[in-house]
Length: 323
Image (cartoon, rainbow, N blue to C red; front, side):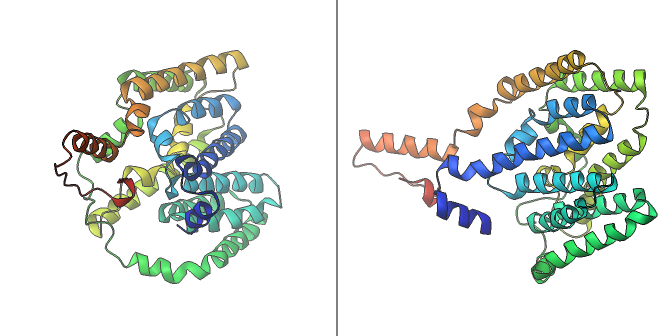
């Protein structure tokens, strides 16, 4: 909210101006995620993952909303990237770890949760000589976040968003997975086929630790969010799992060994084309996302008043969309 207040004060509140920083953060996150996955596995796995991540409605929608999701996706991707660099021997990357961890904490509570899980994962993978700088980086991130701690504990005391959000039911997870695959049987089947062939042929040689780490980064926030939503207050919704979502995608494709460029591009293009078709024609994303139901009803009301100047139109729409 502070960033949006400053940004709109400088550049105005046009749709382009408001969405621009979030779109840029999403694109930057994809670049960081590619580097992360390519470092741990190979460019084939990274490109297959990005072909899916960059085209499904789940990321396309939340990646351009003026909400903390694009920023959280970027900060968690930055933390994953900097941890990878630091564990690989880049000493300066420990500074990046501290800054990225604090940025995650300031952005969203589920980004903070994932940052903590990432830190614990790194601690288990670090050499004895790397554990001290890792702990110092974590302490540095905590110190950077310290001014916000009173607000954090105050927010933690609130009863979630139970006024409008229900606890997850029996079918929440299947519904979430269906939403991720854009309710497209063809897309889900194609991704499953590519993943199964990769694991059957190459069996993810050398990628086992990466797969378990990535699955934990996706599954643990889900488990924590589900448990908290059932026993404390509802907080689990599709958007809060966005931060760990890319790592589950990379885990799915991690069976593949490095392939020639042409084969990698061919498979990635196939996934991207099917996904874009599901996005545009199946979900009709751009047709519906840019047509506000509020604006449509206001336009109908104005059209009615032009025909019936003495008529009356009652509305309870937000003030900002009423001319």
